[in-house]
Image 1 (tube, each protein chain N blue to C red):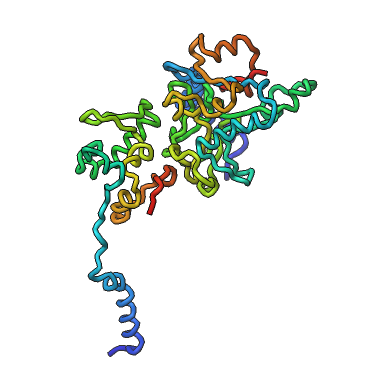
Image 2: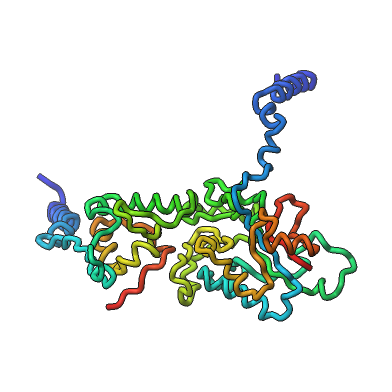
Length: 133
Length: 257
């Protein structure tokens, strides 16, 4: 026996529907897998498309590399250039280094960062390259 | 109930004696503790300094040229609200630039003259001493540097700086930058303190600071540790003054008057 079942049961149903709304609303439409692009003009023109380290290492440690660079350039030994294992010289800088090749922030950085919902505050200060289209 | 006057004085006396003999008192009064805080940092290699030849600054354009060169190089926001202004290098009247030298009778052209003022990159910088996160620090070459990544916006350094050389971003500076004039140099974010950096990013490329370049000889930049440098010669041949020298901060911006 239950009191006010004509009110309580509809309210429970509405509550359950509202709480599970995100689940069934997004059912079957999974967020698209991030698809970072490296097809910038500078990279296209490179004979060997190789970043400062192999792709796998860059994927997992780029944030650590940037942090180390920042420490060295701003408050370490103030050196602004680094040499890769195969002898190429690069600027230790996000906006004057990385982004000179990877000039497509929205299609390179943001792809994974948005997917993983990480919001690094790099671009609060550093100038993102101008992107056409 | 309670204690009488005699009892109270006795307890108070013993308590203060005990306090004086405590560890803290020894540490505060220990010789060398205060001196250690005021000693000059160890310099290595160069010691950057600037000489401003105020005799060469005549028209307002002479000042404006240098200020604009700096603002453009560092994307300095132009905030209209004077209480939230961002200043790296700016114009100051004699009485505000040199409040220590207020003789009752001064040459008129000096009393009403303006001076370019900027961060003095002091040898003994009070801002560095008060920064709780070491976001601002003294480099070996004498530059008082800001690490904007590390600044928490506590503004102790602004209270510490006797020259008003530091500005706080009360609001997002990008709202006050019409267009980024130098895309190679970052802007700042809301909640950090900023100031002149002696153009360390230009020095790293072997260039002189932007204001020096724009001054057409009114400002001279160089190494104070090199006895043959141009600024050492200028300081040898001319009488120079510095801002608030009595504070002991040892400013590294010299004014020829």
